[in-house]
Structure formats: structure tokens, C-alpha cells
Length: 123
Image (cartoon, rainbow, N blue to C red; front, side):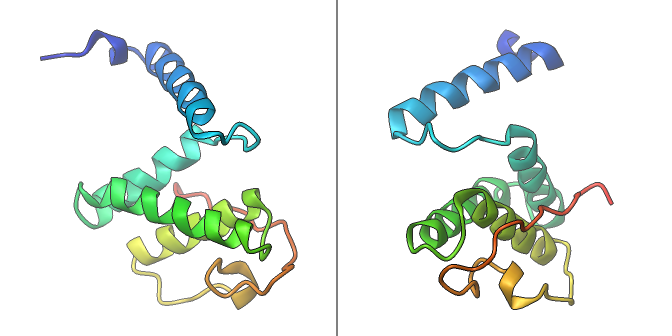
């Protein structure tokens, strides 16, 4: 059974953008730009590298870790999301190399420098 709301990529993007805006408003997080494609890439990597149910668990934990790091003042919200996403992607892909501690959300000291970039999962 097909859900007609998600049959085309433009329709899917519009539905996701609308849902994200509505959910952000409901949760009171309208001050953070949501990278829908980035979140879906992280979820896709977890789903295909681990098992499908790892996708929602991964995105939940990435969001929780990022929120905690931002709330504690260790990273800006955007940098915390990028750092947590990078850590999740690296772990899902079985990377044995860990980024420098300042680039990991779990190790970021209070007031750590911003500018952590999410790795391109297509590389």
C-alpha cells in the first residue's frame, strides 16, 4: 500500500519540510535550522550499516547528545549536531580512527570552538 504523500521526491520534501516546521514549533525548537537531508543521511547510514531499526535510535541519540552538549555550553547547537552526527556515522561505518577530541561531542570541553563539519556520508 502506497502513501500518496510520499510518492514523489518533491512531494516528500514538501511533506517533510511541513512536518519538520510543525514539530519544531510544537517542541519549541524553532531557533535551530534543521538539516533534513543530513538527518536522513545519518539515519540511512545507520539503517544500512547496522540494521534498519538503528536509524531512529541513532537519530534520537544524536539529537540527545547534541542537545546536551549545547545546553551545557560545550558547543553551539549546530556544531553539536555536526559533531554527534559525525561520531554516529563513523561508528556505523566501523571507523577505527577517532576524530580529535575537540571534534567529538562527548569530549568537547565547555566553550569548545565551533565549526565542526558533518562528514559527507557519500564519500
